Image 1 (cartoon, rainbow, N blue to C red):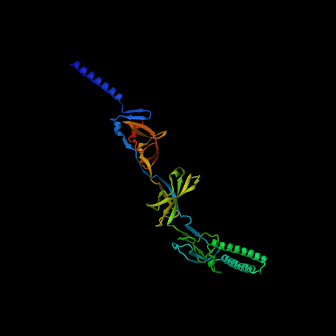
Image 2 (cartoon, rainbow, N blue to C red):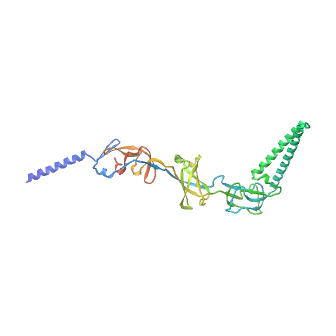
Image 3 (tube, rainbow, N blue to C red):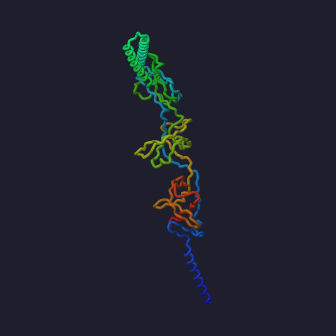
Length: 367
């Protein structure tokens, strides 16, 4: 009986030893160079998740800050062109005006002198025209003198130049010479259509010609949001890209716009470029001077997007495990960028249709 028990124990021990040798001969993982083999029925094989890489429309996003500004050409500060006293106001805050609408009226000694100079130049030009016409008529009938004709032509040329100079001086100040009446106060008009957003007109107030604008007219139905974009992100910004804008005044509302212009100059201190976004503002919720959070969204482009968990890191960069046959995987370097909290977009290293380890790769980090 003792001999039988001894034989059984010896057999069990021998079986255990051989079984251990078998386990050693067929490990769960084999790693040779950049190739990894995972035994099909191993615990590790059950922990990893495979994914077939696909291409899908992807829009890159970038978040930054910006400021709301009026569009140049749609905002006008209206100041008096001459020193004088305000004698009349034609507008109120919030009023809509058209280009050429009178804003205020100014009684000015300087304007009176400018008006007098205009009428003097106008009369001189008219007289020179009459003299020149008469001399030409005399020459045609053989009764004129060539020298007198030449003098008349010279005088008319000088008179014409003086007149044009005076007219140009009035037009600079938006004064219509044809509607000018001697002694009449100057009517200062709006150069653009828009809304009166600021008015500091005080009747009887004396204003110098270098005073700040008395009235500001702006067209605010469209505005610019000027965003600051860092140099390293500029390659992802394109004209007409869609933009989402939020302000602290109304955090729940999303304003939409389009990239209108990308600045040509780089700020050397901030390493940023100004990007101008045109934004509709029909409801007037955006105010010039506001700060805004700006989110750029590029046009959709076919891209490879994979779970962030599929990308592993080493000191040399990012890589993924790509299936290369039955139970075999190859380490491959990839270039990626964050697409969301859970996904990354692959710029290089993967093609649609390839199979990768998308989950459980953390178990391979020590290999």
